[in-house]
Length: 153
Image (cartoon, rainbow, N blue to C red; front, side, top):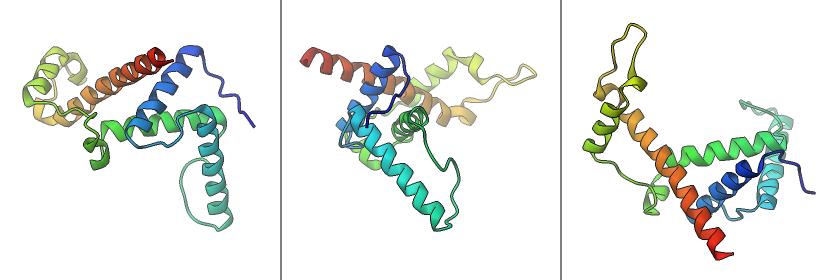
């Protein structure tokens, strides 16, 4: 049974890129939309069983197709931004030097301001900067994977 994920062509392309990248990193076995639907059904079954067993859990008790798509895209991005050892070992997750992080800080001071016009120090936001740089790297990797995939068709 194919679900309607109600996303525009560009959103679908980016989702497919995220799934292809996740497969490349070993986070998914099946990067297709059918694989997404199978994972959603399995996840919903697990939630249903937990509810029937009166287990305490937080969050939705059922994921619609669009909600599960968003859930999975967010989970995959977070797996990259706060990488596990397995993700780091793929060689796809970049490490940033202190100089690269400081340069980002200096070029984006407006992101680190407070209400009264003062700024967070570099030391206070270094971890946030690293995650932000990884988000940018993740988006670039998705585009690279999509180009490889589309060129290979």
